[in-house]
Length: 247
Image (cartoon, rainbow, N blue to C red; front, side, top):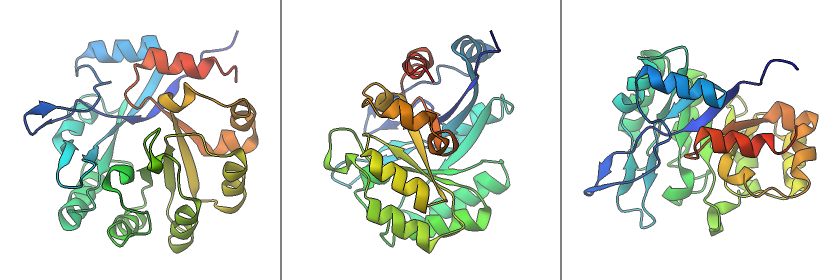
């Protein structure tokens, strides 16, 4: 038998912040001690992209998850070989967000930006989103977009929006974190026509896979364009779901 595959977790939140007196969000990163590294090794996780998530309430009146830059730095500075930072973007606070993104990338070596577009209820083509895309091109980092939440009208991504953004920012690397499996034809069309668009397949989506998914992930398109993220599911459980696909 060969060496075991070591996973790269592209979508992992640090513990969420207190917002309106309640602790909200997921907590897949349990602590910042060396025991965390042992836990990663046991689960088979090589590196983790720690995401500075900023998530809006459904009413778009307040931020219900507001991860701070220093929350991510606690991981990336303690274990720089295992944790990589992804800055967060708040489309309703553009100037401050762009300043923090530049600080995170240029000073702290963050490797991307995450935006929870689904909770903001903004289309990707909205003017609030384009400053993020322009800044990411300037800094040379990808943007990871949370495209929806399972079981909601926003759960399925909008192919027209993705096509427009990919055309307007042809130097932008865009990663779409999908909440529900789209039609196979949609994924194959994107792979054939949108070279700068990739997918992040999270553990919640892998739990409910249509029969065609294994073939797609094993195809050249799936191998080249799909990444994996735990998205709040414990690493052991999340990777078990992935290994059950038999790839």
